Length: 494
Ligand SMILES: *Cc1c(COP(=O)(O)O)cnc(C)c1O
Image (cartoon, rainbow, N blue to C red; front, top):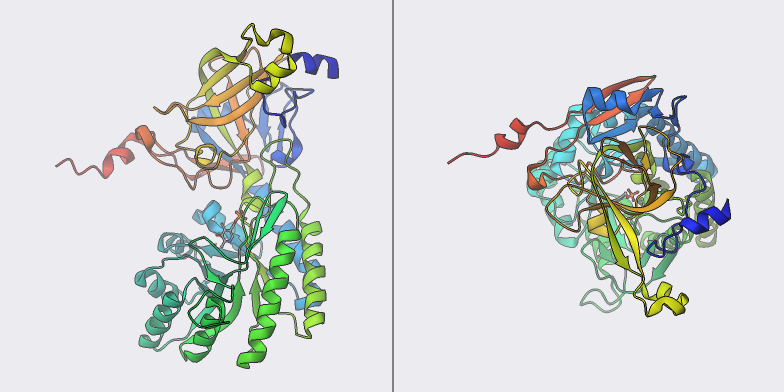
């Protein structure tokens, strides 16, 4: 009912946020496939109602569908393997562990035939505990310690992604001193930055990661930092140079940016093979595939992105007359993001009146003088920026629904906030929730599988929530929530 919806639209809402036709409905792309309302209207995952999860595990709680995780991992792997089968025999898919990592997840990744990306010694420790073969693990990072490099060599990692010339030299020295060869890829910055629907191409890179491909990026005329690194790598007997790597950004929906980066790296790879008489058998195109955090996000199916990228790799290799390198990709959020929702309990509610934004006041010219105000309702939950830092860090948008019941009440513009001593402690900046939301209701925020638990903190001495995995109708903790004792354990008391 458009008329009804329009009546409820708040001038305080951002332009992209529509009043949902049905506040109880789940917008499918934001949720794990096994999440649905049950017959009594309660949200359930794998048939388990959220009230039961709260009783058993408490709130806040990260609720992850193992079934959905495995399905998304397989979907990426299948789509890219199909699209690239005739180009390079398939694709190696590295799950970006930094998005969410624990030993159970490493095992799922391995069982589904994927590999694992790590970015620190701690992440390597999780990989080692899970028992994944080192050959299936990659190590990233712009400032790896000697200890991390040693650990990578101890574990016989399949690849160390080297970020700078100085690091290349350190890896070479450490491997040489151990009488070993390190398998290395070089992370390049192709001058392609992508975010959601746009990408920008620049010659110069202004960021901490990677080796610049710009030809004036070294003191030597015409020689880029990237080329200098290729030349150096081919000269170290303790380095096996596998190939090149790039990662152009995150939450990307259109394949254009990936395609342009692939073309730039393939051209460079061909030039280096020719000039230095080497073969670079691998090319890693990174991660960053977008997911739906709100109803306006429209991720493409993995097959569509895979086919677009495959077409570009195929034609570029043909044009350059080179054998296509083995391609790898590194999706993180696109595998884990939508598998998970955060379950919160509603506490304090407060409604404030806010001046109409300038645009609304102008449109409502007759009333502009009268200082029109509109209501914004603050809905406080029992977590906040300590379990989801992304709204604060990146202005990220999320969505929310009442999970413990359905409601026929009218939509009201709401802001879901946490319990921290910080006015910026926002979980969902703008969402329509039913007018009758009350203390004790359960709220679910979908799309919190990636970079939420991973970025969680103990701000205000809140215990970090646990993570529950649901499979075959049963739920188990894969990471337990912290206790008060955990919070006190490191305090030396002296
Ligand atoms: C963060 C990161 C990824 C994963 O990004 P997503 O947006 O989660 O897909 C992959 N590769 C590298 C090098 C990264 O830094």
